[in-house]
Length: 82
Image 1 (cartoon, rainbow, N blue to C red):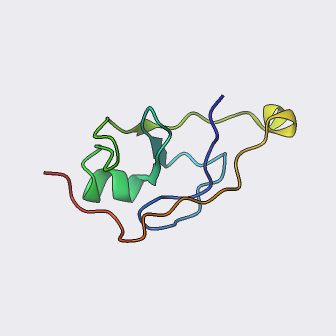
Image 2 (cartoon, rainbow, N blue to C red; image 1 turned 90 degrees about the horizontal axis):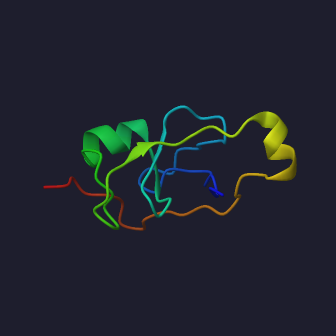
């Protein structure tokens, strides 16, 4: 089950479970649309995998399977992929 991390690793933007602008890689590294598109070119800076839109967990399912509250942030930010 996806952890649904609560923020963008690059800019720390809040990305609640219902966010339609959250993007993830296969390791669940999480980024907002602006960082995924403009800074990362849809390539994860951690694993070099592609970034895809994160699915939205229905509100009813969040009651028994809540989203993560653990924030992950790259201390030096993200740099543009080559």
